[in-house]
Length: 186
Image (cartoon, rainbow, N blue to C red; front, top):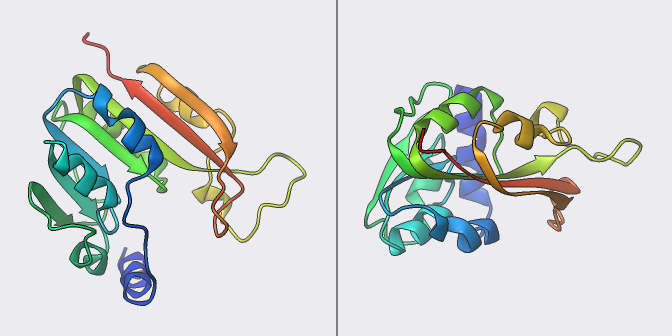
C-alpha cells in the first residue's frame, strides 16, 4: 500500500528507532538450525543485524525504504528487500528461522508456517488487545492480537514458548503476546 509506505518512510526520517534486537530474538534465536533467516517488517534491521552477526544469511523485508537505509549495522550477510508484505512471497520450506516482531498481518500466518524448513523456528511477538474493560489506547483493534490468538494460529507447530504479558513500552499497547515454535520434521 502506497499510504503505508509513505507513513513509514516519514516515521523513519523523523524518529529514532531502537538498534538493539528484541529480547525474544536474543533469547531464542539459538534454537534455530543455522541457515537462512527471514526478518518480517524488519524496520531498521535491529533483529536482522543480530542474526547476521550469528551467522545466518538474512532476508530483511520492509515496506519502508528509509528504514532499510538506516540499518542498525553494516548489512553484511543481509539482503535488504523493500517490499509490501501484501505482495512479498515467502517461499515454502526456505527458512530455518523466521522473526516477526511488533508487526501483525494475519494473512501471513499460513505463509510464515510454510516458509519454515522442517526443524525451523518461528519467533513471533506483537501487541495484544487489552483485557476486557481496560483502556486500549489509540491503537486500531485489527492491529492487535486477541487473547490466545497466536497459540491457536500456530497450533500446527510445536510451541516451545507462549506467553501474554504487559508490553512495558510506554508508547505501545499495554499487552503483548510472544510465541516461539518449531516446525515438526514431518
